[in-house]
Image 1 (cartoon, rainbow, N blue to C red):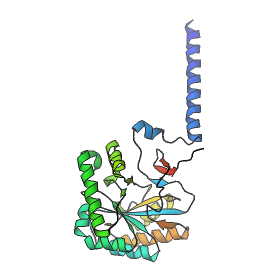
Image 2 (cartoon, helix red, strand yellow):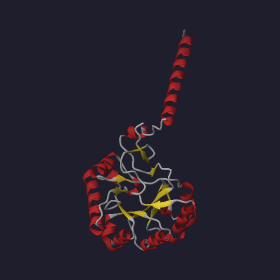
Image 3 (cartoon, rainbow, N blue to C red):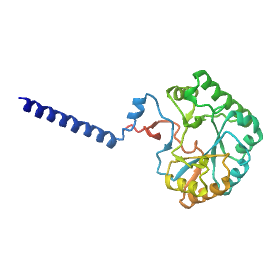
Length: 256
């Protein structure tokens, strides 16, 4: 009897595992990648975009230092590339003319908080203040309303996402980290960007890194050779009728 019980238990377990495997496979076949988002309880930021067009978004986080900005702008002009600069409010205070120049040269400006605090570690009231203060500073200088937010350090939680959504912001991260902030050298930066970029990628650079001229020009030349169009975040992402899966890929929501 004990032997029969064990056989029955083993059979039930094998059937359970079989159907569990079918369910998991079915989820991937059907493209249901939002399960992790549902489990964690909130929508993820946009890390990349599902597109067949060879477009990528260039982004620069700007929190400290200003000596590289004009050189970055010149390199972007050389390659007829547009980028999104995510500015910290305290940096805006000290570099008002550079903010205007970034805008006047046709680039997009996004919000990177006011003090570069990790958002999961501050109150909801402080989150709102950090975002609104910075956007107001940018609008006062450019006349443009800001609707893109990049969280400092890429750190988000449920409250961060709900706050951004309630204020009307798209929360933007990245899928390609150039690694420039590690000061690992231009060859390594070029290699990381070249190997990891694909249509719809959002590439992360930092404006205050030394030797920017040694890697940025080469990175953009390499993307040009691969026939990529280098655009702002707003020219890459979908604004309406979209979904974001658990890996942060934004795609069109199809009703079929």
